[in-house]
Image 1 (cartoon, helix red, strand yellow):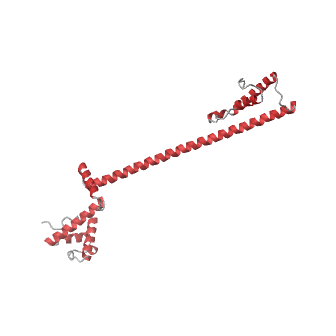
Image 2: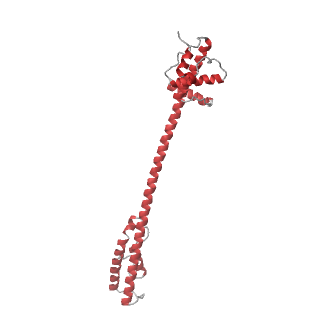
Image 3: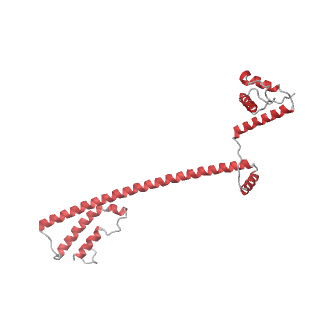
Length: 246
């Protein structure tokens, strides 16, 4: 004949320990139902379980067994699935949740859990994408910074070369003036003009070797050295504005 507490598994020490704690709480609350049960501290869990099976099979103990079993099952469910919670939401939201649950053929709780999990996954994807975008932007900024540094280095190299060229030209001029004397505003003769053009061509060609990097830096928006020398030749009356010798 089945007894009220036959559902107890005597080989499950976790269950027996929980039952001992459960009966202790009931005793503290004033219940005298389990006064006939042997104390586990004195006799051990096995004797405690045996004494539970010896309790009378009546309505009072069947109800006590039902409540204990229900409490144990609730504990196991919470241990496996977590403690259930109640949420309050607007009626319209609850209505939509119920519709989603019906469409998916599952409970409202499972539907809500799925919505939350989907939102978390979306957030993770967005976070990963944002992280990737930041890394991409950082790489672009580093590349631009390196390019800017290279441009600055090339620019300074060109400026330094031009300064050296200018120093050389000034040195040539000073040496020429020291050799033949100073120059005046007298017009150049035909032979002198040709000599001038030859000298200018030589000097400009040499200077252009040092300014080649300016083309790649898009720095040729200003007049070239050749154009400037032609302008000076026109100003000084060495050539006409439309001869195009330089």
